[in-house]
Image 1: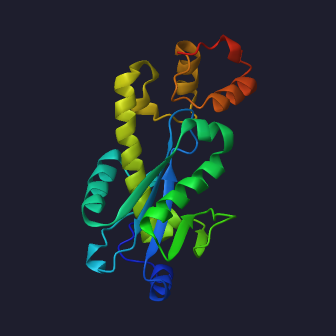
Image 2: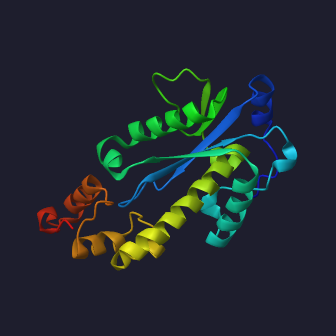
Length: 211
C-alpha cells in the first residue's frame, strides 16, 4: 500500500518540532559494499508529498522513478557506513552516519527505522518499528537509499563483473558467497562477514585469495 500523505504521528510531531527528519538505510545484510543511510526532511509544503512505500515492495523501475521525483523536490542527505566499519561495529557505524546526517540537516526531531541512538545524541528521536511501512519520511528515505545502492551496484558490476553484483546486490545469498570463494576478496567485501559464513559453511577461509 502506498503512503500518500504524512501519517498522523508525523503531523503531530511536526506541530511541535518544525524540522523533522526521517532516516532509513539499505544494504545492511550483505557480504559486499557500504550501508547507504539517507535522511529526508519532511517538507512544510505537503503538495510535495509524493506517494511512496517501503522500497522492498517496489520494483527497480518503480524505485528509480519515485527516487528521481523525490530527489528533485525534497531535501535529503546521504551518508555511508564503510565495509570496514561494517566488519568492526555495524550498528555504531550506522549511528555515526545518522549523527553526520543530523549535523548537516540540523533537525529538531528524528524518526529512525527500528533503532534509536543510545548515547551522546541530544536531538529528540523515535526508533519507530515498521517506520518504512508507516511513516512517509522514512519510506521516502528507504527509496532514495535503495536507488543509490542500485546505482552503486551497477558501478561495482562494471569493476567486478565476475561477482554478478548487478543481480545479487551484495546480499547474503549463496551466489555471492560462492563467487567470492572462487574469485577472492576485494577491498569492498566485508571480510569478517565472509569469514563468519565460512565457519558456518565449513569452508577454509584461508584458501580465499585477497585481490
